[in-house]
Amino acid sequence: MRIVVATCAVDYTGRLTAHLPRAPRVLMVKADGSVLVHSDGGSYKPLNWMSPPATLKVCEPDEAQRAAGATQVWTVSATKSDDTLVVTLFEVEQDTSHELGVDPGLVKDGVEAHLQKLLAEQVTLLGEGHTLVRREYPTAIGPVDLMVRTPADLQVEHDGERHVAVEIKRRATIDAVEQLTRYLELLNRDPLLAPVRGVLAAQTIAPQARTLAADRGIDCLVLDYDAMRGVDDPTSRLF
Image (tube, rainbow, N blue to C red; front, side, top):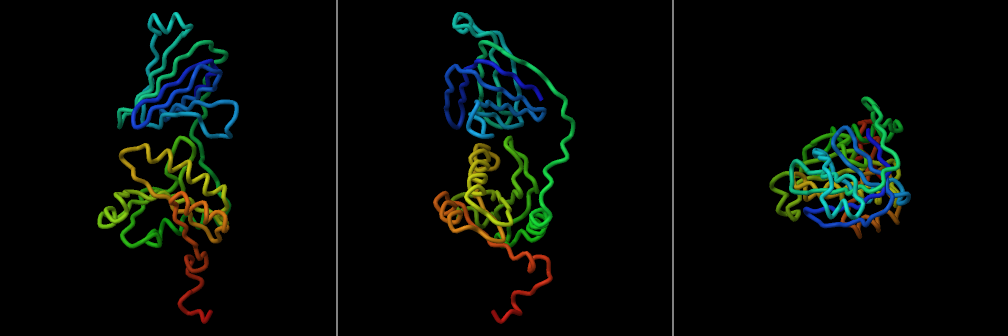
């Protein structure tokens, strides 16, 4: 991973256009090709970023940029779209690289990890015909628990939706909705995935989380852990 602390300006063009004026920021270049632009605030969410696969090209500034004090221009181009992130660097305070090696991944609490495994095996709980794409689907801001493909016959019915991103919790709160919202914002930038719908799956879902999820078009799914494990048959209950 390469970490650069520099005064920079950032321009993003493609499916959206965004501009960050000249200011001190932290730039992160990861081994997977992603580039993230952070400020000293806003929690862990970057101000802007380019998701992998992408290529980074470092160029000398042109005359106008040099006159404004620029020392380097980074052009980060998406491989699967026309999206481009241009970072114009001025004063560079620090530029370091670190070899982090292969990450072992997020180790989740036993029940939550087991819920993820069970739902991956029983993905039709999301609806008949749905198929698993991958567990721990990677994004630039962390892995989505499950990425699921919507069956072709339902894509038209669901406004062209092609994929479902599922976030799994034991007890889902507003924080879980916010987390899934960030994933959806990122995933829907990818033309090979979009449109992507969100599903919040949990054993219990707080009322406030349900309200916020509904407002953001995110579906909620209550998981019966015992039934999914096969130790309890809900059809045999009197109550």
